[in-house]
Length: 171
Image (tube, rainbow, N blue to C red; front, side):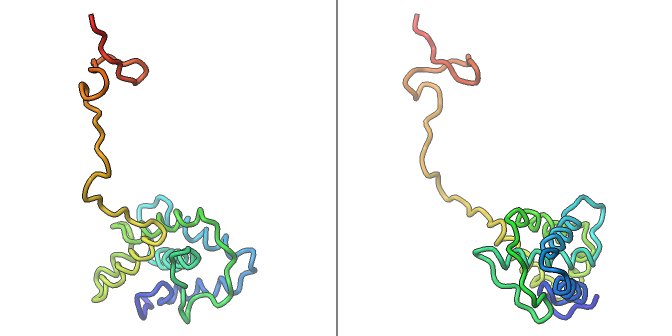
C-alpha cells in the first residue's frame, strides 16, 4: 500500500483520484465523486483497498463542503475547485465510510495491522461524525408522560378503537 500518512489523500490511489478530478471537466466532477461513493457504499461481499481509499478521499470532499466540515487540504488532493456537491451525497458518504471500516473491507484489514491504526480510525470517525453527528446521551427525561391507565382523566380499558384507548364507561 503506497501510503505515507493517515489523511484522506495520503496514499497513491487517493492522490490519483485527486488528479483525475483535476483533469476532468468541471461538470463531470460531481458524478465522479458520486460514482466512487456508490461503489463503496453498495452491497458487496468485500470492499477492495483501492475502492476504500478512493471512498475516503471522496467522503472528505463532501465533508469539506459541509458547514461543520474542515477543508480537504492536502498537497495530494484536487487543486481545482469542485462544484457545490448536493446534500444527498452526505448520506452516501456516510454509507461508504461505514463500509470502509467494516469487517468486509480490505483497507480496514490493512490498517488494523498498522501501528497508527487508531489514528486512522479516529480520522474516519471524525469525517463520519461531521456528516451524521452522534446523538448525545440523555441523562434525564425532558418531561414525564403520565400515560398509564387511571392517571388520565378517566380510567382506561384494554379496548381500543382504531389504535386509541377508550375510557371505561360507568354503569
